[in-house]
Image 1: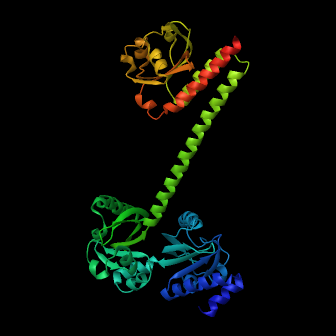
Image 2: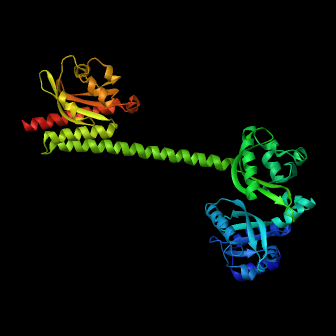
Image 3: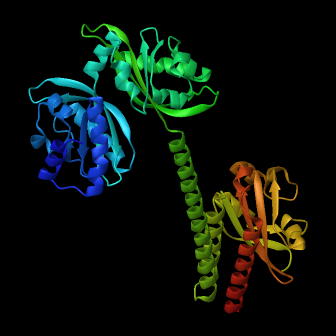
Length: 441
C-alpha cells in the first residue's frame, strides 16, 4: 500500500499492526478496483477512507477521520445504515443501497457492501451506481467492475435476459457466463418460485429496488439454495428503463444455523415447561402433605385436593366424594359444576363405576360417559356437556375412603395426562384424608 495511506492512518489514530496489515490488503484491493473504501472502528467511527472516497465525497481524509460512518449520507440512508450496523455488531455482512451527499451537496447513489472485521470494526466498499448505470448502457467497463468481486452480480436487460454474469454468480449457481448470456433469468428460478418472483418485480417497478429478500434459486445441478436477493431497476440519464442489477448472497448455511438455533430454543422452552410442570406437581404434593399434618380442618384439605386436581389436569369439572363405609358415596367438595350437582349429594356404591375402580385398584378412563349406564347423573353430564371421565379411587389397603371424578368436554383434554402421576396423586390424597380423619377421631 502507498506510504501516503499508511502515514495518514497512523498520524490520526495509531492502529494495531495486525489490524493495519488486514486493512492494507482491503485498501489495496479497493484502490485497484477504483472504488470507494471506508474503514471504521467498533463504534462505526471513521479510521480511514481511500483517495477514491475523498474524491467522490469531496471530504479529505483529515475531515473524515473520527466522523460517524453516516456523516456524509442523507437522512433516509442514515436510517438504513443504522439498521445494518446492528447486523455488523452480530458479525453479519450485508449489502444495501444508499445516497451519499458530497461536500458540495451532490447526491451520489452507491451500493454499499459492508463486512465486519475480526477486530470488531467494519470495512465498507461503495460502488458508485451513477457510473454503473452509465456503464450498463455503454456495455464497456461494467463487467470489469463487477467481475472482480466474489459477490454474485447479474445484470439483465429490460427483457430480463442476462447481459452480465460475474465470477461470483458462476461460483454460486454453477453456470459459466457463456452458458447463460442472453438467456432469461428464469434459468435459476424454481418453477414454484416464479409467481413470487413476479411479485418481486412488481415491487421493484413501484419502488425502484428491493433489498435482501429471502428466496430460493436453482443451481445448475438442480439443487435449490436459499439466497438473499437484491434487485435494482436501472435507468439511464434520461430516466429511460434499461434493465436490472441483481445481487445474490448464499444464506443456506445461515438458514441452517437459524433452524438449528430455533430447534435448540424450542428444546430449551420444552425443558423449562417440563421443569415448571414438575415444580407445580411438587408444590401441590407439599401443600397437601402439610395440610394433612396441620391443624386445618378436613374440609380445608378437601378444598385443596379439588383445587390441585383441577389445576394439574386442566379439567373442567372435579367432584370429591367420601365413602360412608356402607352403601353410599357422599359429595364433599366440587369445582366447575353447577349447584344442581349437589342434588346428587349421595349416590349408591353398589354396581357403580366407583365399585369397579376400587375392585381393580386403579383409575378408570371412560369416553362417552354421558352414555354410560353406571353413571348416576346422566342429565347433569348433558347439562355440562361432559364427554369423558377419569375416576380415581381413594383407598388405604383394603379400605375405600372415597373417589375423585375428573370431567372434560373434549376427550383430547386427557390425552397426554400420565395415569401413573394421577394414581400417585390419588394415593397421596388418600393418605392425607386418612391422616386428617384419624386426627379428628
